[in-house]
Length: 480
Image (cartoon, rainbow, N blue to C red; front, side, top):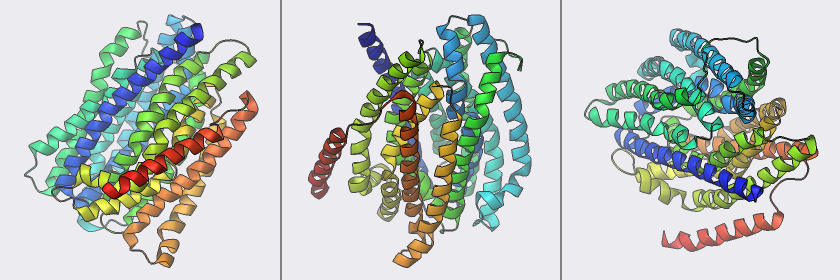
């Protein structure tokens, strides 16, 4: 009965995470729809804003949600499970103070040094397009710092099993961008891009502010002091370094893709951003919901080594089934019906049906690694629950190296050999990332199985899922 109750609780938490993500992603699709309608794909302003929005996100991803989930939540959740409110408040306050100080310094350096970073951000941009991108990056950097603070709130809320607020908070970030685009819809595209950047920063502040009152109520003994003397704070920092490096190398891979996309001609960067709003939806909705709900529960597992391994194995296998049940049909839909989905969501204004077909190619490339990336996220969470942050780091480095090498090969030499237009190299970038994701997933699973026992999806289940998805796609294709 206890196991059943705990399973129901985890399912409810995963549902709350999924509901919050669904709301924020729906709002994100609305935002991208309005953006595509206003800017189109093949405009310099669309490319400039898409590139600029990714640059400060490096800071958010380096210090934000993924890193805090891996380093902070396991320590903080364990303290909550042990009932140590005094120490948990001290750890939460110390981590926030350290984050605030470090991100403030990095934001300042980023704003001042943006022109010197353009060679790595978008080497294919020149003239007014380059200058507009520099201006947008400088505006957006402070917003990224605020999103890091929002990620700290998410870590607190998730540890206290308050999942819905933390994952629905981005709704207000998207809403601020939507309101800005509607308010300045008659402005020229360059002016609209600048106004949208300021609206994005305002949305970041609102996303942090809407979570803060609940966080302050939950952490009754919060002490905002960068104290690194306690063992638990040092453990978070010690775990923080390899996870930050892991996220950092993944971000480097994303920036290499971005740099390569800037060399593929006008529209490649904007098309990749539009495609990303689609292919990250099932990853966030189904993969993140399960992983986010399981990480605090896994980190709170008590007992001897054998008991903990059995609990983790049971949770992991159940989570993999839940993920595959939704991700397999999503991947098949992207492959078979991606043009219909893209056209339905985005065609209008400056976004044409030809743009939808172009975005479909990029989305189809991403479908190759969709299942691997979502299941890999859950495997990584299991390592983090075991306080092992270095094993995922090693495999992330290998994945990045493969992504860069295969991405260059697919975007340039292989594309020229096939005889495709340069812009279609963007599809090669997402496809190569998918292949590298399968390599990383395989290594994560094999290494973890040696530690806690056999895990993974049963082969008959995988065959049934893909067969059902293929039949559904075949039946749905002709009518579309």
